[in-house]
View 1 (cartoon, helix red, strand yellow):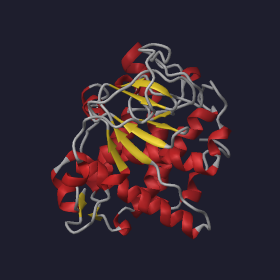
View 2: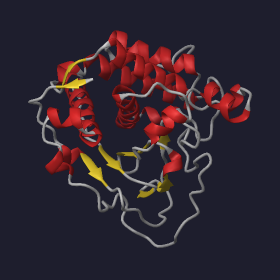
View 3: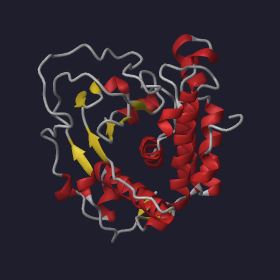
View 4: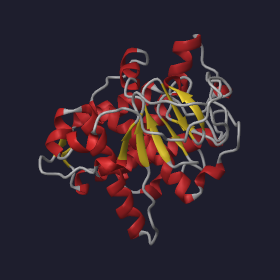
Length: 291
């Protein structure tokens, strides 16, 4: 994963709230990215996370903490090649550039979504969340939330290969949820639904597919010079690592399809590949037929 040295980064698309935090503000819903504790469907319930816990002190959702000055540090693609923070900025820029062009070509208007980097905990309009949630998207404030320590967990706990494009896949998946929110597809997943063919699983697999379509078109956004076989292998490894069957086997020693919320490792790999091979979001209809 190599950025164009002269690519101009827009750090305003990423908020740095590391060192921030906040109190509890109930309400809303979050959509997760695939690890243990991630929000699995459109409900105000996080598996393994108690949204009613924490302080009763209220703070504005999305409050920016005492993080680094991304605008000063992340100005070019050369910066993105040298810094993880700037790589996230560049990835977000590329993803949103792709979807803006895609929406425009379809006669639609794309609404950008910011990414907030946080550490340990953060306050959102979907509720108070800790790092245990993993990466997630909050439809209520149209933001992607990311604690960068998750990428270490992805390798050490879930056995993914890791690498820069594994991280890019995770960000692309969360922006896939933003696309679903803009298109109204989140309504297709019933609240609390679980199971191998549930709407929740179909929603997550579609987000994987959308991440693949961006990957196919990433170079054409002008931010990346090329994607290699290693890059795609990193993404596929990450997708497989957060499959329901893989997570269940690691955490409880058995696989229970009735508890699926995100899809199997094979499904997640296959739907990312579908998006990557076609480069066309229309290939990502996971709500029709078998998955």
